[in-house]
Image (tube, rainbow over all chains, first blue to last red; front, side, top):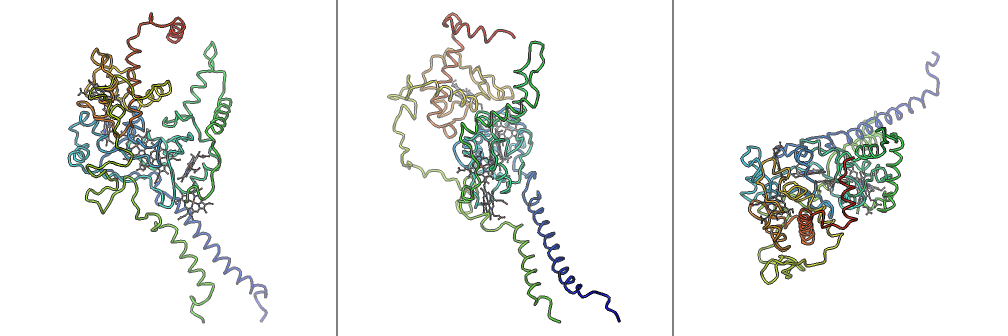
Length: 241
Length: 199
């Protein structure tokens, strides 16, 4: 009987076994990568059930309280710091002082027991992170934590993966803003609005279009990078010490 | 036929696919047993990592003997002077700190009608009443350091230098709210007219 398969099929069949295995492995590997970036692993966008439903939306956007009123050490140390109960009671011993939802806060104050806030952001312990350097170099809270002023409950805006840190560290300049504006939310939009308003002519027509304002913004950021001394930082040892 | 798992290739494949599963879980190096700020402790009775100083001890370099600087007093009386020179830079610092820590209740002008007061906080007195106008810097420093009535203290949130800077800014506010236009120099008055002119 004539051979159905040519002799070369011997090697082809071997190759296809190995190749198939490789494809399967790659697929599994890729799935693992996707899985590692999924909110299930990174906890991106996941809201925690906190002991008290503290609202940044209410306190930051509604009442206009500065981040540093509560996160007092953010400018000077690695940790931003979670406020002690006393900070809440500075207002809530008077405001909403009988509200049911604030009972855990009052109890914590009465009995000198910490409120057990659950961490929303948590880097692995082998990573070194420091808030103060980012604040000093003009990176806004918003660039990493998102629109905190629109969060009725705190959530993680970004993955906190290494690739996320590096994406900015490779080219940090487009994330810079003046130091005074670090705590502001929606700063870029404000910059556009202010620049446009400043360019109005006598008839109330803006003399600058969005492209020109964008260029102005980039020029400002280049200047800030020079003034604050901001460089690309991708050396492994700055984050893994 | 050889058992499947005995071939080199399949062993390698099994090992390689096992590697995949190690990436997704949190290992010991992710959560090391070291103590970090604000964390929970299974060791200390109060469950906190953050420790207070043991009673009746003083941290090295924190004896704080200088009554003027640390308590705003000279010979037991509220200091009439500042413990260091107040420069324009320090005033700017005081202004920025005031905006963070005081403005929510005392308002930008210091009249005591801040946002929080409008939502039910006890209304603080205006800084511009006679009694506070007459109060020395040491008094304001003392209010910040030890609190006053319904107002809690800020000693653990604002450091000593910044408390003095805020004091200086509050006194500047008092001055600014009680200065008449006729007290200004002609240049200053020109600036004022330009700034308040309706556009």
